[in-house]
Image 1 (cartoon, each protein chain N blue to C red):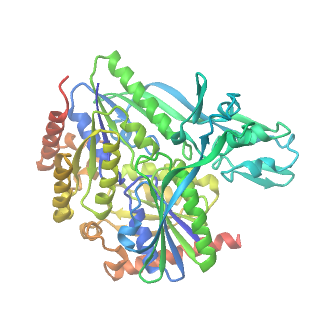
Image 2: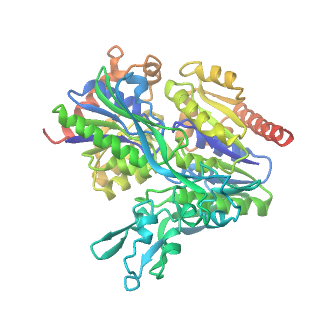
Image 3: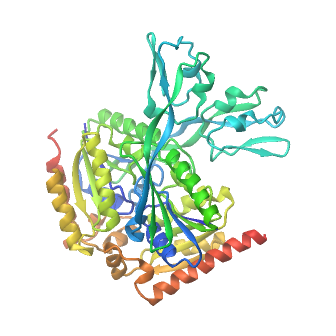
Length: 289
Length: 291
C-alpha cells in the first residue's frame, strides 16, 4: 500500500503525521519525502545517511559545427529552451523540461545529450530498519517534477524489492508538484486544520485529487481551533475522518523540539495506531470494490 | 517601485495573516496574492472583483480515437509516462501531460490535437485596504510561475496608473518556480519563520535562494516562544549572514480568531500582540528605500 500524505495549505501537519505514521507502522515500510523544495521528514525520522546521489535531467548541448539553422528544434520546443539569434542557435538548458524531442527532430545530429543538475537523492535508515528516501532540489532550480519523477522511480524499486508499504510526505499546494506526489499512491491522506485558510485549501485539494479516483481519508489537526466547516464538508462528501489531533500548546512545543507526536503520550500512540487501521480499511475497500 | 514579497520556505508559518495585517497598516499600496496555487489572502480581504481574465498557458495533447491507428509511437516517445494504452488505441492522461508536443510531431496519422490549456483565472479587485491583484490556478494545473509573473506585471501596471509606489505581495511556500518568479525585481523578501526544526531548515534554503538572486532579506520569527533557544539561534544566524531582523511574535490564538472573523489581526481591539505587529511593520517600512 502506498499512502500519500497531502494537504493543500502548507504547515497543516503533513510531516508530523508522516513521521509518526512511519515510526509506528507495523509492516515493512519505505518513508519517502517528495517535498523536494523543502524536505523536512528527515528532521523527525533522523535517518543515518547511507548514500547521496546527484539527479540530473537530460538537456541538449549544441555542436555548432553541425547545426544548419533549420529551425526544426526551435519550432518543436514548447519551453523556449532553444532559440535562433542571428546566425546562432542558443540553448537555454535551465528552461528545458527534458522531453527529448529536439534530439529526435534534429536532422544533422547537432544536439547531443548533456545534463542539468536537478538536485540530490538521499537514502538513509531510520530507527534501524526504515529506509528513508529524500529528494532535495538544488537551490536555484525551478522545476521540482523531474526530480520527483526520479525519486518515485527509485521508491517503486525499493518498495517492490522489500515487499514494503510506502508513506509519501507530499509538498503543499494543488498544482504540478502536489499532483506529481500523489500519482502513484493507493490512498491519499489529507491533513487539514479547521481554520478558514486550512478549510479553503482543503477543498481545493479535494477538488484537485478527486479526478484521480483514489480513496481519501482525512486527519484534522489542531482540532478545536477555528470553526466546524471542515467536519460538515467531510460528512457531505463522505470523506472519513481517520484521526483528530487536538490543538494543544504542548504539541506545538514537542514539535519545536523535533519530537515525534506518536511518542508524546499513550493517547497519541493510540491515535496513530487507529490511523493505520483506518488507512488499511480504506485500501481494502478499494481492492474488494 | 518598491515591492515587499512575504515568503517562508515552510508553509503555515503565518505569511498570509501577517500580509493582511501589513495591508491594513500600510498607506497607499497595491496588494498582490502570489500564492496562486492555494491563495488565502482574499479570505481576509473579501475583494470585490472589478476585472476578471482567463489565464491560458501551455498546451495539452489529446488523441482522436477515430484517427488513432494504435501504432504506439506516441507512447514510446513520451518521456512523461502520460500516454496509456486503452482498448482500440491510446489515450493521454491530462494530469501527466507536460505539453511538450513530441507525440504530436511524431504521430504518423496526425491523430493528436494540441489545444491551449486553460489553467486558471486572475482578478483585479478592490478591498477595504486598497486595490488587489490575485488569481486562482485551477486545481491540478501547472505553469504557476508564469501566472505569478503575470500578476506581478499587472500589479506594477496598476501601481503606475494610480501613482502608487508600494506593492505588498503574499508569496507561496517552497523554493521552486512560483517562488523564483515572485522574487523577480523584489525590493525586500520578508521571510516569516518559526523556531522549529522545519522552520529553521527551510529558512536556510529560502534565504540562500534570495541571496542567489541578490534580494535583500528581512526575517521575522513567528511563534518565537515555542522554543526560545531556537529563536536565539535563528537571530544569531541572521546577524552572521547580514539579514535584517524584522522582529519576533509570540504564539497567539488571536491569529486564528481574527481569521474566523475575516479580519486582519491588527483590526481586533488594541492589545499587546497586535501592538507588536504594528511595531514590526514600522521597522519593515524603515528598511525600504524612500520614495
